[in-house]
Length: 204
Image (tube, rainbow, N blue to C red):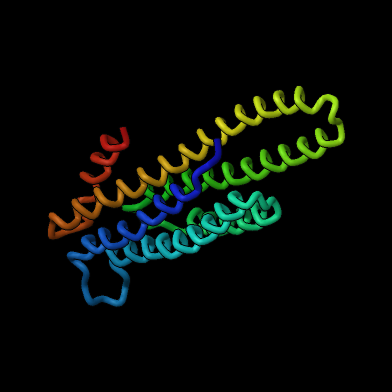
């Protein structure tokens, strides 16, 4: 069992669609110098999209390192991906997207933890394999125990990874809901309350 990092990239790519959908919130923008709520929403989602694109590249590198069994490259790319993903958590979200931001943050937390745990699990396996090669008389028994322990650990990592994917997907669904409500009204701000109540039903 191993993590499919391509799934992370695919879900992060949903942010691009979210940016397009969020343009519907601009239906009542004015010409004043002060930014409208719709403009702030679009700027936030544009930032999420930009960071997600960067993170997807780093995750692709991580996936490549995993396929090659290159632990050093795994560590570097996992660290790079984590730093980029954490930029999303550091963003300041406008009020209508506050709940969306919390979902993105939760997704980032779970994904970065899963990356770190996967690297450490792989490192432990490498170390165990090296030790076993020096004790050939007991190699078969030790390998069986290590394989079982690794399997259990990977199941926990997979669960955390799946949780991160779920949070990101829910965030994108919330943005889609907000965009749909904003596009059907002459006032995006007036639809925020209804969108918030709808989001809680959709989360289930």
